[in-house]
Image 1 (cartoon, rainbow, N blue to C red):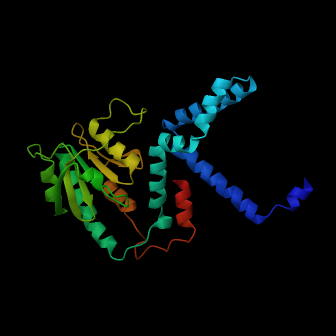
Image 2: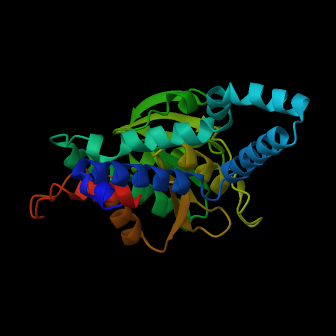
Image 3: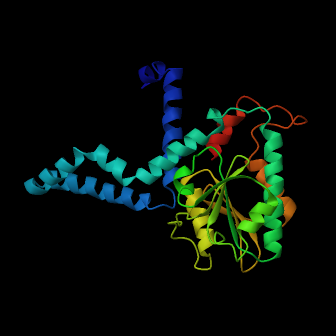
Length: 274
């Protein structure tokens, strides 16, 4: 035992730490998803394979061994949505994002227009669904609607969701400072934990937020309440200032001029917390 401890190197500790972080991220990624049931199913197959070999069940062993010979392909097919989401989130991490000069001012104007439009629509009890693109490209979703490519303004956003507008039922996609498309359809959330009280707009917002890093703003037609779907979770915002503050946090690419610089280790800490 002591010889093994003496042979233990600092690189071995780093290796163990990395494996632990990866396993932790995998378990967090699979939490509260259908992947848990699939993992249990794969565990059952492993137990069945052991039992078949133990009791010389040749036909069963043959079938299970042929399955395990293609286990890599089977895992990719079974866990394709989870793997795609994990890789997308890795690319969205601050570790891989640069800071663009001059973006803060443009984002400030965008947030002002979005907040003004959302507040006006909420006051009139007009339902709305706004998708604000971040690092993940959403062209495959935007192509399902009507192409616009217009400069973002609060008046334009309000007019798109007026009841007599032919595009008011769909989602509006905002890319940068442009309205890319309107009248778009979004994938509904597959989360079985959602209550029946949640409407189609909110389920659609969650569905896109589960698959991408987009920020999806929802205005409820029934209550006029404003919500944000981010990272597969729904956040309810009580007032205009709370919405402005939250959007500022989500679209901040760097500290403001009067804010202290971020320590070198903070991006890694933020990624581990996600």
